[in-house]
Image 1 (cartoon, rainbow, N blue to C red):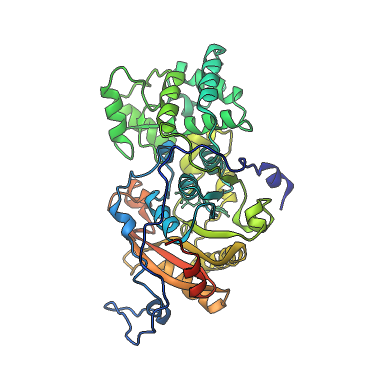
Image 2 (tube, rainbow, N blue to C red; image 1 turned 120 degrees about the vertical axis):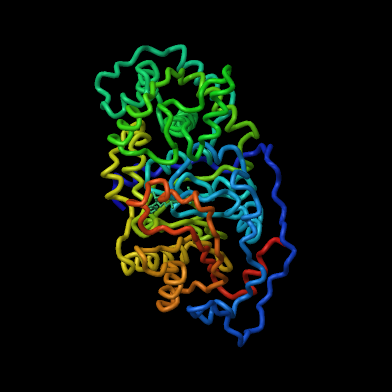
Length: 462
Ligand SMILES: C[S@@+](CC[C@H](N)C(=O)[O-])C[C@H]1O[C@@H](n2cnc3c(N)ncnc32)[C@H](O)[C@@H]1O
């Protein structure tokens, strides 16, 4: 591993005591047994299913997580929206089915940290891996939140010591988003906060989630509600815009001109105080987890005790799509606050244009994941169907499984589940026709397990 990358590996601490969150006992009572092989092949019009798909017990796994609201979950999940994020109800389903308290749950492409946070909320040890500094910042902060009193004191100190930071050096595309007063506070905080400190790291991550939003879009309702409550400080700091991703600077400029938008004068400290108290209103997660700013390719050299012991019980993850999302470009505002370069980030992250390259990337990744998994471990990968033009959609999850099976790397197939997304929820939809590209409204969950089925049954906490 390169030394620069090594130096960016940071982590939270070990387990911690207090618990204010609802405990998570086992929910499923369905015994897991090997089902007799069926001769009947399930077919859909026009397509054949792989034989393995029907020979595995399928009754135990369903997409029942969809019955829960998309907003279900610990308030910390809502710290910041993230492109390609899945809702906490999804990892919750697999955590309940396949793990016990204290087990290790890994997401090797953790994004905003949904899987490891949910694992920690349920008393498991969540580990998140992602080389993207935005993903790392959000995940590390959620998995190792500071003491609320220290947090409030730190915000008060920062506010009391505030001096007018010069905004003259800031790029014009940033200056068009924030009022001069708000931007001056942000520039001051950018320089004062030390992300190596746990309390400061939490403040940085919270600010990332507040930088933009408040228009109709992912958090539109929230933005409007806050505006109606005249006494509450605004949730978002910028001119109103969708907060899932940063639109391009020329687009924003035109939008501001056409809508005659004024940059709002927001006191960052007042909004920050309100935001952290909302995020921590249920207390911290039951256990502490660990985040690592590392590429999955370097998984085996991550100095995490559970990874070194090959003791991962469950993996729930959504790997990067087939060239759909550019995490650098579409996060340029948040990356400005982190002093990171969007283009450099996009070059560093894995994005594959060609199916064969993608399948090879998934093969290499799954090989590594197999090695860090404990016997009987389960791996659930969310993989969306892709569609190009008028052609038939490619069921990518099936393509990945066929490739893994051909290469015999050890994983067994439990099931491929379907997760139909509401029409408007795919990020690519917001980009309009031109960029809609390859994502479709169907995600699948490819569920794999390591070892014999009986081994898996033994561990499941009924
Ligand atoms: C679809 S997102 C995951 C979102 C996540 N499930 C959530 O709920 O927030 C895919 C993630 O893969 C990360 N990624 C891209 N290349 C990677 C690599 N080589 N190793 C690890 N993570 C990578 C991206 O930074 C991105 O955060």
